[in-house]
Length: 164
Image: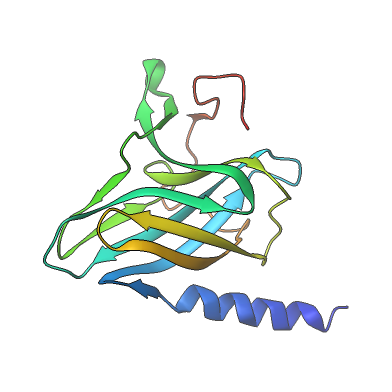
């Protein structure tokens, strides 16, 4: 079995390096993660680049790894604690610009995971853009990647008791 681990790692590395394209929209450096093997939620992060002359908007997403996928962001609450909130209407991706989905900021939230996210696995996510339409991307699970901004205090409750 140990022979397969280097092959899976190489495949995952290639997937990370290869951007996805659709109608002038490019997805780069995407990865997904959850907090552990029993987590009911997970998240995905990526660069969304719009190389068109029109503003666009990421208005939704779906994946077989979760019962539903929502656009979320973090806001600073009382005491400086970051709290996650659903973003109605999705994320604007201006013409000739980039929108970052990153830890501690805007991201895709997977609610009601249908299976655990395991290091090196690939998950299929369909992104829905207002103008560019649907775009299916293969996103590697990276449970080891550290946040760019270091440790953060977060309230992952999403304002409800139901995480999936």
